[in-house]
Length: 331
Length: 217
Image 1 (cartoon, rainbow over the protein chains, first blue to last red):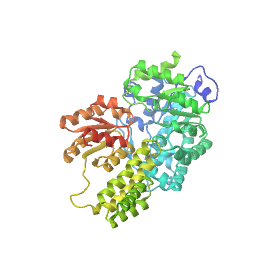
Image 2: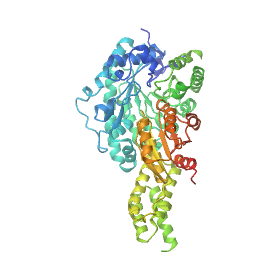
Image 3: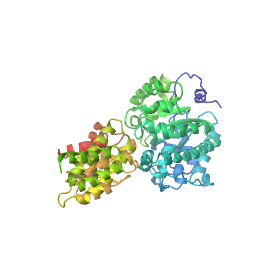
Image 4: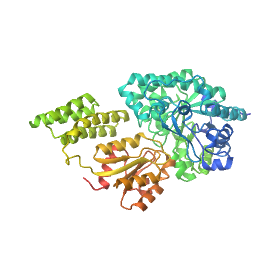
């Protein structure tokens, strides 16, 4: 089997042109109808999870497969209240698991709880089929967002000012758990870990908060995750870019139009593979021509991997995802 | 009590909120009561004025969400002391009633809560329905409250798509109610296209916009 050039890119080699390969969730209703695997089954059934994840590659033409599709795997297994998924909505965290900001107790059998085993099985299936011909991205909930799930986001945010040491301890402990799970995913067959941490957005916290609470945790994760990691943070991260570049992570996936490809490239330079940043609203609501225009602008701005700026809306026309995948060939 | 002393107490209340210093706020609130400062003035020209400064610091990017949340805690700590001293019938005049929530399918809470809090502090009566709120819940609460405004938040492009239908159904039920929308994927242009009466980019803006569409100064 041929090896995807995405691996060359992450190994530091120059590639001829950007590749359309997305580490964020790329699932649409059309894909569900065409591939025969739908929400909500695909959240917990390994076969359906693998099949639906693969459809981004087989139906949309993306050079990449991303799974799972929600950010509740960890929270659910650690005891948060979860609203179950439906055909048109992912599961969501509705109740924190912890009363205070103390670190969670991780049960020794954690990976046989919740849906962990199913995610790992789905990863193994995809890997067996594709080997290294297509990169496999395994998403995990980043430390700040997972801590927010476990304790409640408002409490966590206030804690960064009122109980900084307690929050630091909490984040270190959650980071430790992230490392163990990330390595399980890699062992199961993922090529890249995608650390999704929307709560670490510049829309919510300052550079100082990011630097104090998250940078050391991310750096430790980078040291101990046994594979390459892509950090994804939604929203406005413009002021955080220099700190993101200092995490050591190999890739950064970011959101347009708030963060332009030019700005990201200018600040981060060649320190990270840049991934993004086609606005999900463009993919959802605009024509294929406009999608191509946005893709061309992102590539001119310097993204290495062309991808949606964030998980795509389910109602996104498949034709727009295809147009995005095709856009790399026109440059 | 001389005017100078009054000014100092009001300033301490405002500063205490901005500096998220609960003790300073509580001490100043006790002092206000002891010195006979009108509790309503202490609230509006002290605590609320401080919170308005917090809103401005947030808009300027000097304060972030954690600061705003704990400044509000300080304000509420002062409010708890001052409120029992308000004269009967001379309470805080409410500008209008708002039913607020994040739209069905959307569990994003932080932005919606900030808006809800700033509107409460800004003089609106708030019924906060939380997140993932279905249309029927907006409608029944609005009917119960006899509200003036329904405010809907969406943080995802998927859930945002439900807004036009929600607005249509709300207007069908009560043509006079004003609908405000907000959230990251929404713009003023989109809000107008969806049929909303008001839109704001952030919590401070939402208070101003609500006053504007109700035509209250």
